[in-house]
Image 1 (tube, one colour):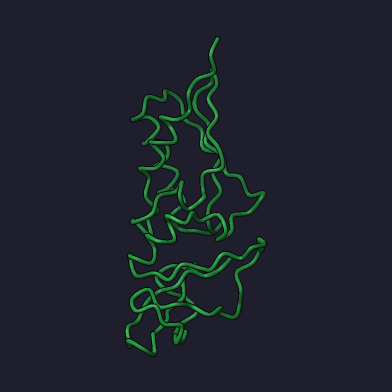
Image 2 (spheres, one colour; image 1 turned 45 degrees about the horizontal axis):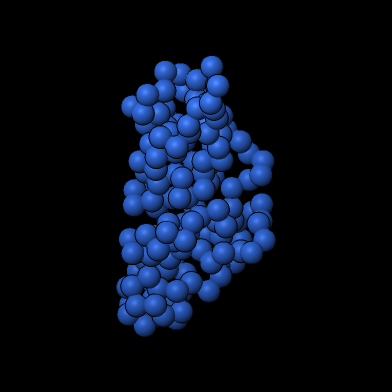
Length: 163
């Protein structure tokens, strides 16, 4: 007997956008930890970017809907909190999409951290590329973002917090 192919399910999950940042999907954001297929159905191991994220129910429903559309009869979404999600899990493609969208992506940490940093790191303006930026608010449109203004081009922008 051949093991079932999970690739169609991974492809379907790439169609599930992050509800707060719709230009990136949950796979390239590093939220999907695994897809397992068994006689019981398809199980997705999922780590949210923020355990208190108000969009969790939307993401879980998106996973279920996408896999059902890809042919899964039964879908189980399992929250996995260890290891915790960090900004190091974001793919280079997602980082580029974030920047194009106008959100400064966090610099890779190199080593994962369990907590968001309290002091903002140097942030490059996604519009002009300058590092001459200033944080204007600790929280942006979501808890995982901060508000900045670029001193060079004078444009406001959001930046993701490093985790």
